[in-house]
Image (tube, rainbow over all chains, first blue to last red; front, top):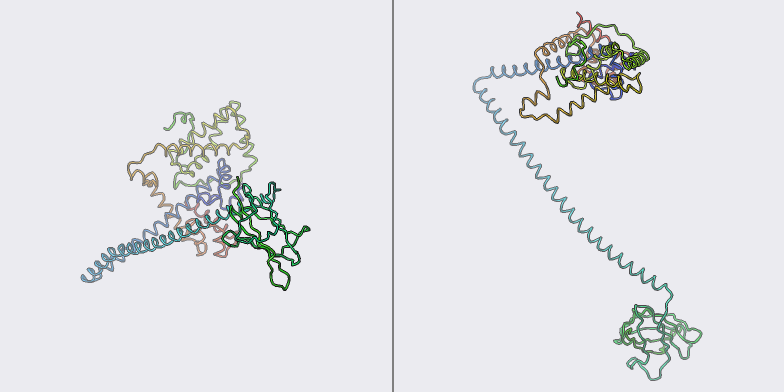
Amino acid sequence: MDHTYIEENQIADRYVQGTLPERDAEQFEEHYLSCPACLDRLDLAESMQRGFIRMAAQDAEKLSAARQLAVVAWLVRLSRSRQIGVLLTAVLVFAFVPVGLSLRGIAERGRELAQARTALAEKAALRTELEASRRDLASERKAREEASNLLAQALQPQGNVPILFFDVERGAGPAGEPTQRLKRPEGGGWIFLDVTIEAPTRQPYGAVLRDAHGTELWRRADLRLSGRDSLSLLLPASLVPPGDYSLSIEGQAPGGKPTAAGTFTFRVLPSA
Amino acid sequence: MRDPARNVLPFSENPEKGRPGSRPSGDKVDDKDPRDEAAVAADIVRRIAEGDVTAEEELFERYRRGLLRLLRHLGAQPDLAEDLLQHTLCTALKRLRGEGLAEPERLAGFLCHTARNLYFNDRRKTVRRQTWSDSGELAQAVAPSPSQLDSILRDELAAKVRRLIEELPIERDRQVLRRFYLLGEPKERICADLGLDSLDFNRVLSRARKRFKDLFES
């Protein structure tokens, strides 16, 4: 930091005013510590600044005094009744202005309170909605997890699959006692049904599974015969809790009327 | 005295230097070569390390006024500034007599740093110890009222500034001084508002300073 820079950038004046950036101030301090010329500059700058401030203060004092004198002179020129009027007005102003301001403040606080209450109510409603959404999300996640587990289980190779071979029983009907029985596999799994069709000419076939009350549990169309003139069905064990069931097969020749190809009954027994 | 150890320097000084309203000296402004400062500082540091007592006196003479100014600028009252000056020089001497400085040519920086640390330590101690029981005492500590002498000196300064302003023939120059010294506005804003360039601004300020100095010396 040299004197040309200090002079051109009013470093001493700005240092005294406190407007010099901290880094520049530190550099200047290191410089002036052993520099009589800059210390003189600082003294001069400080004196000038103090002089200006004092002059401004004096001017302000004079102005204030002049205004007060003007008010007093004006009051003196007024008649006594007007002086009393001015006095009363001043008293009223000093008494009522603070009250008015307080009332205004109270009204503003009231409005702010109402707004705050509305905001709180909105917040509570939003929170309730959020909690409901969270519950829905949790149940959806649970359902998805169960479905994933089932899918994973289904994709695993299966063993101990119960198999029923159905042949047409002469004279048997939906109301008859089931002659075919099987044990429901433990822990879910699958049941395989092999249904032999007599006079297999009316392909494709449809199958309808009903429980003992005749309630339809499952239906499937477009079934094709295997090489052994039989239909192969794989049912999830969860579809058939222990009880009696009937499986109706219909021929569904294109353009023709559906024809019954046989009804097969079976009983599912509880596992062990 | 705050600390007996601070009295070990038997140096004389001019108490009027740095007081509010004190007359700026009329020394001729010489340009200080920073290389000279570095060389002188390194020489002082070396000689003090070698036990040269005259170097210690030179250290005080060279840096006393600047350190006092720095401490006053930080906010120390005159008595405290004197105490802290002594303490700063004691601390510096102990260091220079002992381990010395890693960068002897930056002696001024080291002194500034020491003075600043001592001032802020002192302020922290004062704040911790002080309990205010009287509001008048508190007001006095926050904004100490000027003495009668200070008031007179400030009135004199104001009169000189008023005269300086009245002597200026151009209203624009008066505005420059008011806005810079009174309102503390930055140079760039003043120049932009009044249509001045940097050289004009510097010229106005330089003339005003010179005239103010003349008024002081008259």
